[in-house]
Image (cartoon, rainbow, N blue to C red):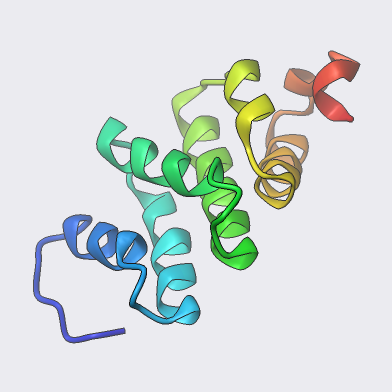
Length: 111
């Protein structure tokens, strides 16, 4: 990752949203952002995880991070899940299944 000294999570957000950064850098940023519970971070991750034109690796990591944030927040949003790219959705559901499987009791979400 570049030598960006911006305060966290702003530095990570800038890498995640920078389409000129490498896939590896953006993927690392998406994963590292899982440590931050702010709405601003969640919104940025959602913008990546719902973009069908996004690199599938980055979208998948964004979905995983969203799942981790939701677990900490105790939040679950079926409408958001429906909007995710296929890999982001699979990653998010994997995190939820491991941490709060009861949230997936509705078979419409688990499929």
